[in-house]
Image (cartoon, rainbow, N blue to C red; front, side):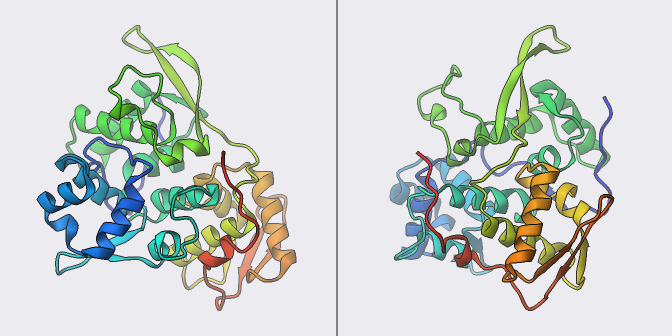
Length: 316
């Protein structure tokens, strides 16, 4: 199978740290409250187990997700500092403290898929570099093994398989799987319906296995203001000194909004045209059938509050 290789100039990636647990619904609000009361809570695992009511491995997993989703950052003095996004979502009078607004879920997905540092390998590769429309577990795992070796790692198939499983459980419901009750609890990002089972096929072992595909279609629940936030955030991190950006990068570059949200090209172009016409996002879109170009007013910065300025879009 052909792979789209990840270049040597890519940053390092995380393949573990989640302790094989996908993030649960109640975890992030719990973590926010715990860190607010005691910034060093996650550096005392026994105290965290008591405070959060979860086991040691889950404490470690939650610490991982708090960082990967951009809710809090570890500091040199063995404490966590809550980020602006963490305060904005979960703080007093927070925008969505119980994760009831689907825009918040897309925002967390954006942080996890594009701005987590170091990046999560499964997210970077499957969302940004996987060259096919579908994948099975065995196909993705074989590609993970090849890419890991190319980057100079020596990960076992067990480590890579667990990392892949966490990605799948983050976005695809496990309610029908033969797992324990605790492991069958879906996380918040399942509600995005980003990853769907498209069928089954026989793997090299001869066993039937699910085939997955990303839902690449128009997504009205990714609002224009959320898309604008993601675009400016991506621009700040990848080309902070550049005034222009090719539309093709916005559509298909790893970590860019088009790829992370899995939007069709025509949807991305129509959003850029709308943002340009609105005149408040600092973006000017010049369409072209071949490339297309964006120009940015560098005085305009990503504004998380703007995501929630209009009527809430809630999931039911």
